[in-house]
Amino acid sequence: MTKTLIVLLVVLFSQEVRADAHTIQAFLADPVAVLDEQGKLQREIAQKDAPKQPVPVLHYNQALDLVQVELAGQKVWLDPMDLRIEPPFHVTDLPCQQVPKSLASDSHNKSTLGYGAGCNQ
Image 1 (cartoon, rainbow, N blue to C red):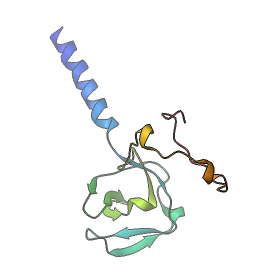
Image 2: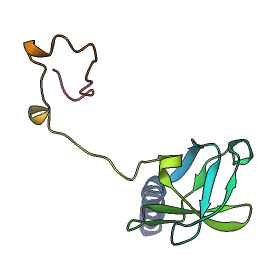
Image 3: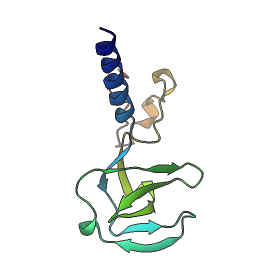
């Protein structure tokens, strides 16, 4: 019984850790800038030459806003603005009551503002 409980806890914990792992799902820029650890351009790779499968993020440098990944057996740094990363690093929650509402004077504006699924406005 104890062994079964330990195995179940280990499996649950390992899935929880894996769920928080960030992966690059897509390369958005063409070409993709490959940077050094200080953010200086080293070279560029064409989007067509970038990996098609998800690439795990090894490290995130919050101060420089860079992610480290392994491409072709080499650890390199990339700009997250050029990538689609899941789950995203920066998620901002806005309380629905603080989201501005349209006024009658805004009727000349032809754009729309999406509040998201959580706001029924």
